Length: 226
Image 1 (cartoon, rainbow, N blue to C red):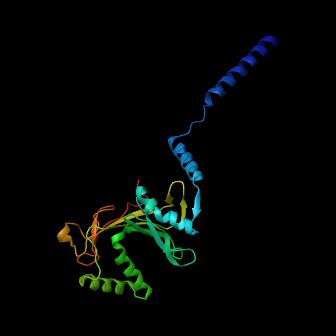
Image 2: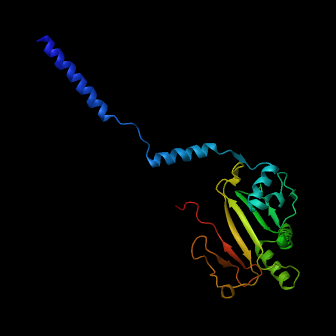
Image 3: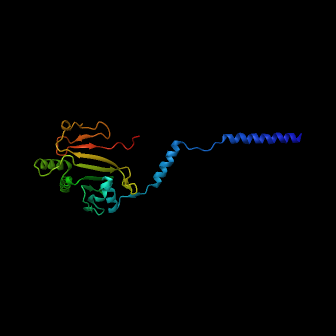
């Protein structure tokens, strides 16, 4: 009898073990989990640096220019000592105005070298204490008199964002985006067919129509787009 009871107990233990094993499945990661892991891994791989040296100002300024043109771009702007200087010499068609380290956020502007007289005039007027409305009016009058000139079609692109750290390996300022400008002095909605307000994000429109500073504006898509 004891042998029979022992057999039944042993059999019960085996059944219990088998049943328990069937309920245990290998842990599987969902696509969402995999995506989160990859994202975390990518974030950890970023080598973010502060924009706190002249070298960093030059490196991030060049990110505003097309990649194939960066090595030969001229870079100007305020250095870390607060002096407006040529940070890097260049000999191609682009001039880049580096981020101003005394101002919040990040902003670098890359424009065609033929726009430099117009840009330099604006900097000089601001240095005299003129506000933006006065700068606009003075340059408008000087354009009408032929003292300043903007060739239609000259471009400017602004690389900007709220953060002041960058990934040197990826050549990106964290969270920064590009906004594009194409100058068309005196152009209007009627002369171009473009609206005076954007119809949607990333759509071209004409800003300052009918003035010396009329230009086609193309702003970036929102960062949080799907």
